Length: 454
Image (cartoon, rainbow, N blue to C red):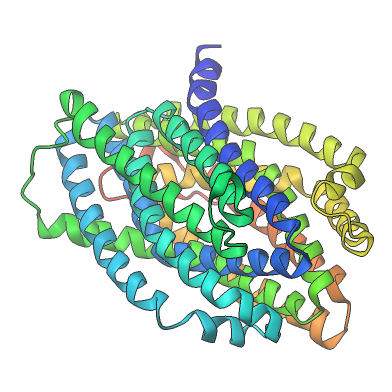
């Protein structure tokens, strides 16, 4: 029971954090939905693009999450702070690149995705502003990763709730000109995210450099070692490859659906938004697995680390089963919350039912993956993502949608197959590791640690 309590203490605030982000996306989509199907389509396409851009730079926060957790477990937070300094410098360089790109690439990206003139006209300025917001987002995720690594999941939850409240309020105010503010339409929704992420960034700075300084000496500069720079870059690269492979797969998925028309795009965005609700508990328990396992590995307690992950999977799957039932029973009323256009919500319902069937695999995939990140098995995660996305998901999506003309059914069938196979691969890897051989610090597992037996 003590282990269950510890897992829930880590997972529930993380679930609330991810829930606030997902629920914010739902409310924003509902608000923007009143601007028409074209606006819903723009938001859906741009969300996928932003996800890909975030994935390109996301490895830094992923590396900080498990490396600092191991430092915390081994009582070497000074090295964790050194790694955090390196991460912030890398993120600053990424932010400069993103700032330059925001003025150069939005139209070209949307054009290459096959967008029509309406999407290009609405989407180009919207994407530019969203790229500016992403700069703040990248810093925020790094700060959140450090906080979670030392076991503080409540502060990221609080900051995320503040962020969500700001996004929803400002989106309504700026998109429709409420309370005397200018009516900016879809652009108002974009600038609301910039404002909210900027405020969250300032609050994260305050928390990290002031409130956390007493316990973790976060204001003390630690001389940077080249070895740690190389380690962080290498681990960030592998985690970035993992996320980028997944995001490119979703980009191709979206591009194939984009060519099916505005109604298909809108229905797909609604279904993806609802699917993300299924990710809420699994993401929370996955974060808990990374933190708890990383800390136990730092202590040199492999058996406790393995047990932490197994119990976390059991708890997470209970939550996922409940969500599957909700999706099956209430698909139509949920879809109608997003739009009043019958063609859109009727198409979305069948996709929602399909997502309900793979929720347990989604949970297993994410939580086992979180456990593997906790021990630093990033090489396996990156190779699995590369193989399954580039050799299976992407070609299968193109085959089923463009060659066999199965439309959305083909695309979503390929997505479900990806989810199931990734869950099987991550689960097999987790259960075949010799946990007594797992070591901290480098984030690597000795080759002898994998036994090949379940």
